[in-house]
Image (cartoon, rainbow, N blue to C red):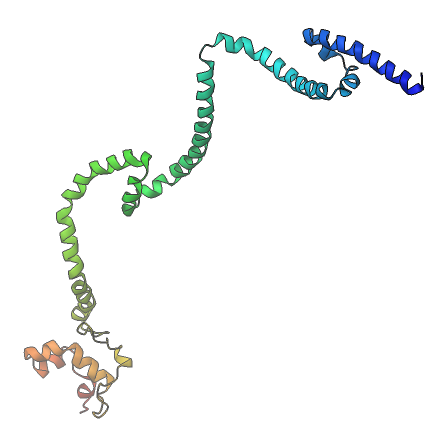
Length: 244
């Protein structure tokens, strides 16, 4: 018998023993899992390798299930609970994102409440419903201010008139006029020392005389005499000094 035959016989005998051990180990699965030296023997068998790897994975799964099995057995509805937890995980993640959005909106809430035009934005937000209802209660208050709105609009129209009178008021009180208030759409004239005659073909009057004529126009129209004007000291400087 050659050397190869001797080796083959040894391998055959080893496999024969391994077969018996394998069958025994198939029944005694925990014992087989603890033997690591059997791995080279199984590698000589084509199907044993796959079975061993599968059992190696099954060992970890089995140990995990062995711990969890008493828990599942005591819970009759554990399957439904697990499915509910699976959905709850998604809901929790969604709520986690919504929590951040809600906190951001909570910070911006005072800003939206102060903006009157943000009312349509609140209608699109679910949590702004309470704020919207609060604003709905305040609506009668705005309705009671309906007349004030009309008065305010009327005053807004009259405001240019008041502004014109405000400018003209110092003219009548002091008798000195620094600016001429013209009709709407016309340019305001400058101060007396910067005023120019509107027509270059007419010789301009001196600044002092022109200023006096404008300031005392009401007295001249009312018919007050020259003596009365001279007595008050309001006569033009040229004539009071004897000029023309």
